[in-house]
Amino acid sequence: MSKKRRIVIALGGNALGNTLPEQMAAVKITAKAIVDLIEEGCEVVVAHGNGPQVGMVNNAMIALTHEDAQQPNTPLSVCVAMSQAYIGYDLQNALREELLNRGIEDIPVATMITQVRVDEYDPAFQSPSKPIGRFVDEAQAKIMEENFHYVMKEDSGRGWRRVVASPKPVEIVEIGTIRTMVNSGSLVIACGGGGIPVTRQGNHLKGASAVIDKDFASCLLAKELDADYLIILTAVEKVALNFGKPDEKWLEDVSVEEAEQYIKEGHFAPGSMLPKVEAAVEFAGSKPGRTALITLLEKSRDAIQGRTGTMFHK
Ligand code: ADP
Ligand code: MG
Image (cartoon, rainbow, N blue to C red; front, side, top):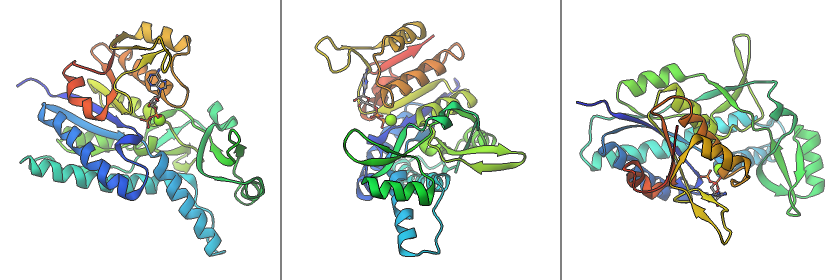
């Protein structure tokens, strides 16, 4: 029997929805797409984003401080941990059910609460860029700056929002456990929301006020697990040059060199498509035989068969 293809899937916002009921519905569709790949003979590891969910948890924890003056503010790292557990709970239930519905009874499903180490001297800490949570007015923003030591920024005329650093992932702390579970045939959900950001202080891991990009964390996970594929599932079927312009051109097959050139030419929006293409290039360029794909959730089976999506190779 030939070796199974190992795939790390990075789920984007549209795979999880924005609210509790939306997530409950979305994970059912997501689970179908993932189990399709398992039926294709692939070994799948799931990573995911957490934008709306971590915002929701963060707001709920702020509300708690208004209700009860004894409650200190909840660190962002704890909010990420809460979002991992909440999303993992819905995903692992939906995956278990879908596997059983198809008569697959020998694949246990588990979520790994994952810490990801970042460099405390990462320049990203000096220029927080990622907006999280709700919009507030200027007076409220000043109170949050003073009470919680948040960095607040005005966001294009829409109000003030907290911004946090988005440092690069350096090390997946629980990688040994994740690898053992994957090698023993479990379907593992890991690195949720890019992982809980931590810095190392001797043997102590300290939670950082940051959000790690899930595309970069998934790339690191795929490299560490020596995956054959990194599949980034998002809201578009393919990546485009001149996206949204009259001369838009959808890409099917791209070499690492071509993609690097397109990055330089500014074809991919920072904060949305750029980190995905950078992660795809990093993975595909890291070792011969590694392939990255960017496509729609519903198209993942077609994409793995080479019928759609944008493929990145060395
Ligand atoms: P996710 O939640 O999956 O991370 P994002 O919204 O962050 O999704 O990123 C995907 C979005 O990037 C697409 O829906 C599309 O609107 C946008 N985008 C920006 N530049 C491009 C491009 N060159 N080609 C395709 N999509 C692009
Ligand atoms: Mg994104």
